Image 1 (cartoon, rainbow, N blue to C red):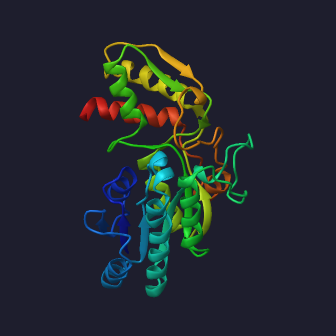
Image 2 (image 1 turned 90 degrees about the vertical axis):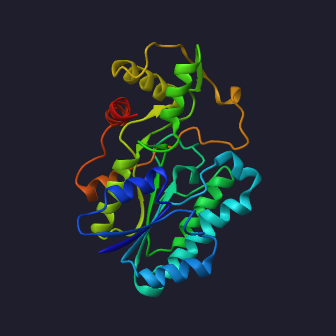
Amino acid sequence: MKALVTGAHGQLGTALVRSAPEGCAVVAHDRDTLDLTDAAAVRALVDRERPDVILNASAWTAVDAAEANEAAAHAINADAVGTLADAARAIGADLVHVSTDFVFDGERGVPYAPGDEPSPLGAYGRTKLAGELAAGPDALIVRTAWVYGPTGGNFVRTMLRLMAERDEVRVVADQIGTPTYAPDLAAALWRLHAAGARGVFHYTDSGAVSWYDFAVAIQEEAVAAGLLARTVPVIPIATADFPTPAKRPSYSLLDKSATSALLGKPAPHWRANLRILIKDIAAHG
C-alpha cells in the first residue's frame, strides 16, 4: 500500500507518518513542499505518486484568525479538500479527511452523534464543515477535538510553560470537551481505513473535561513526573472573562460509539493519555 500524508509536519501528520502500517510506503508533504491551494500542483503530485490512500492532516487551525481571514481558511479547509477528493477519485484512491467538533454549536448538552445536524458558530467551523462536504460521501471523515501530542504547539505544552513562568494561571472552566492524543488518533485513522470505513465518524479520547480541569490534571501529572518543581494556583474563569474573536462551543463532546464498535474497543481515557505524554516529555523534552 502507498499513502500520501498531507500536513506531515503537524502534530497529527507526524503521528500518521510514524504509525504507518508495516509495508506501507508513505509520501509525506507539508506546506513547505506542497501548496494545497495550488490545484494543478496537487493533481500532478497525486497523478505522479498514485497513492492508494490520501490522509489529509493539513488544516487552517487558527480559530480566532479565521474570523478575519475566512477566505484564506476556506482555501485550506474546504477548497483544497475538494481538490484532494477529485484527485483521489481520478486514480481510484481513498481519501481520509480530519474534521472538528467546531462544526457543532455546543448548545445541545449531550454528545453529538455523526448524523446530528451541524451548526458552526464561526468561520473555522464553517470552513471545516465545507471541507466535509467537499470531501464527498465516498471519503472517510473523522471529526476530532482538542488534539495534542509529543510534537508541535498545544495546550499541554502551553500550560507547562505558563506554570513554570507564572505565579498563577487562569483557564476557562465553562467549555466542556475531550482531549485527543495525536498518536492514538493517527492509529485510529489507519485502522478505520483498513476496516473500509466511509462517511462520518467521531474519535477523541474517552471521558469529558473542561479546559480548567485539564489544566489542573496537567499540573498534577507534571509535578508527579518531576517535570514541574512547584505548583501554582489554577484559577477557573468564565468564557466571558476571556473574550476571543471566535465563539467556541460550550459543550462539544462527540458520540464515539460507532467508532468504538468498529474498532472493537473504546479509546483510552484522556487522563491516561495525558500521563503518557507527560512522562514522554519528562524523559525526552
